[in-house]
Image 1 (cartoon, rainbow, N blue to C red):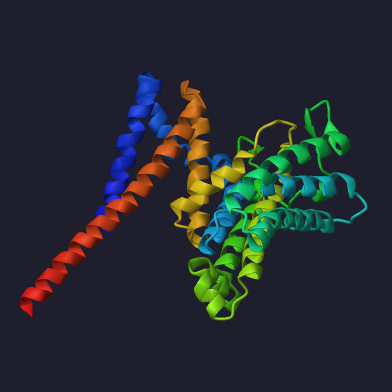
Image 2: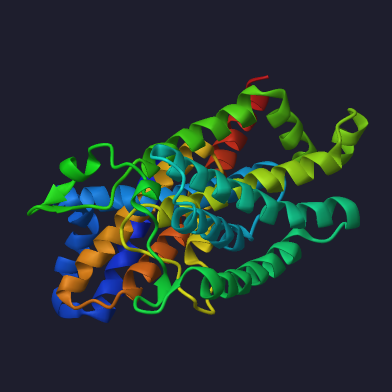
Length: 356
């Protein structure tokens, strides 16, 4: 295990340095330092790590939960943006809701919208055996264009070229994080969303590991025929799994756009990147809900480091390349660990046979 981790670390260092040298050889050292320590350089950047990690954790949980139940949810992008619209719409239009009830209802709307959007490919899979991947891809584009039309029709701000700002009561509480994570009197965007994301990860772990419902979902995912033989309702479990996955992604959209950071939904013909970024987050954690919390923070840490790299004349795309390389080499490290384990287990077997 230690050998595999050391091998993985060295591969990352070897992979990152050539990318930095190739893009900006004169300042490769400063850029590498920014990646390693940019997220810890001051309290504001630490807060930004938590802010960026929140939607990544939620979409990672969405992808990871579906994978644990035998489904590949590539539709987190559509579920994310649909949930975001529901949250922002409630935040802008439901101004009659008092106090904290406003942001709570907005998040509940995001959860419901995401669940309904995720449920559609689940229903198609359960009733018509439509491939989940195909169903999710179609729902991604339907969600993107539907949200574009709805934003333009109901909550568009032409001055900012994005959705209208939500009501003050709909913004997630800071819980003192704006006072802790700040630098030169400039607060970060950290808020209660990171706590909700962490609690969501713990809740998903409990559901999968400690409940009969979670056991049935995993059992049907691993072997649907065995599940049916044991009396489990495979169709119900498929629909439930995709609904929960969609709810998690939708909640991620709500948490991002209710953060009060000035970030609004833009009318663009581009799928929400946060949904696809959840895939590497889940892969890095091997779909473990608790691991997804840490992998989401790790990817967000690299994102903040990438922002700091731009001070040294690196283009923003460099950090995306580095993250991609890390994902590939992490997967390669897992393969390497499996090969090493088989070699050593084979040697032990041979030794035992000779002894016998």
